[in-house]
Image 1 (cartoon, helix red, strand yellow):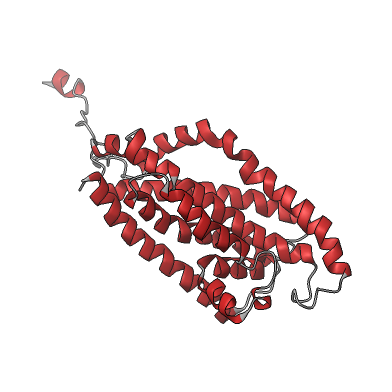
Image 2: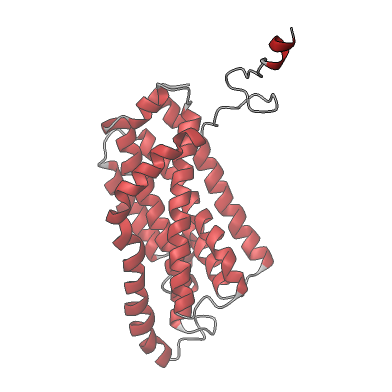
Length: 283
């Protein structure tokens, strides 16, 4: 009897951790981490020039080169009393993140639906359509955060982002990108052919980029165009990021900008969830 007692060992049932607690399986987002990490490792080199090199070239050509002529012409009063480089750089941060959000939400989403069937393969697992959507959006947000962080470091090197408020420009820039990403994911889920993206770029992306207030004050436009520009979410993103980078945030206007962007984020996510579920025929 004593030998049986001393030879007895503690057995743990499968799935239990020491201490008797049941081990939990990873959540639906964590189950997708490996897929998105592998995808990023395979594709980041192709987007490095667009994400990092082109913004620096824009700053050098327009902020430093053209900016010297603008400053010599005495236009600083129209720019809020700042140099053109300081005016331009935060706008380029917001528009760069915006363009990256558009690129990550168009062809890659349609490809996962239509061409390589990645989303269909995911649905063969316990993942739901909403899990897939949230995983996709989390991956896009992570990419945008990396792009914004690198760009912000460039602005520090240029001496533009000298205020402590500029740290908040990172989450603000990600919010700008995601406010555009969710409705564009919904659009990509709705489209049958990729030619619809050409229409999106010509009638949506390019006008928003040009009239967002990144390159000149929107107040310089005629009233009808000024009102249209202020309806665009990118305008609110540029104004929000610029105030933070330059260390001059304004409480109520910035709250309006954030609220407007959050509305686009939530409404776009609502449509994306339903259109993606209808397109995939999933649960």
